[in-house]
Length: 90
Image 1: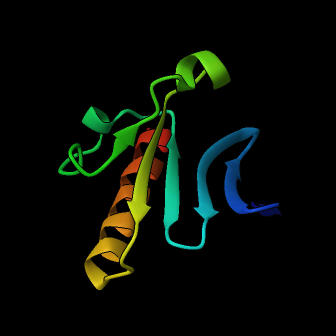
Image 2: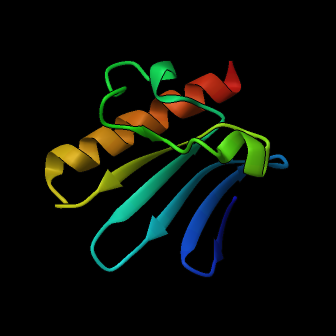
Image 3: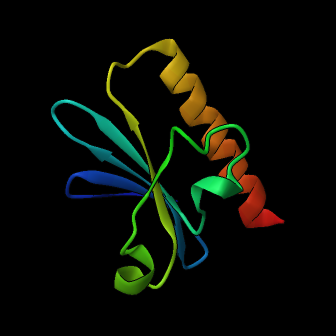
């Protein structure tokens, strides 16, 4: 289910938020819940881990930022989303 909430769009499966897209003026952040950068094949250097996420929200949260809006960045975002959903359903 997709549910717009203020400045982000969240993807919720059952009662768990899996992914959030936060939109800013200069960038778009793809927040990946329940994963760390080392869990994502091929993207560990492009994804940033929010250090206080485990304490603040009780789960790991990593962020991929799209700044230039290039085709490569959108391709990476799609691949990350695919990996995240594969891990969630396995």
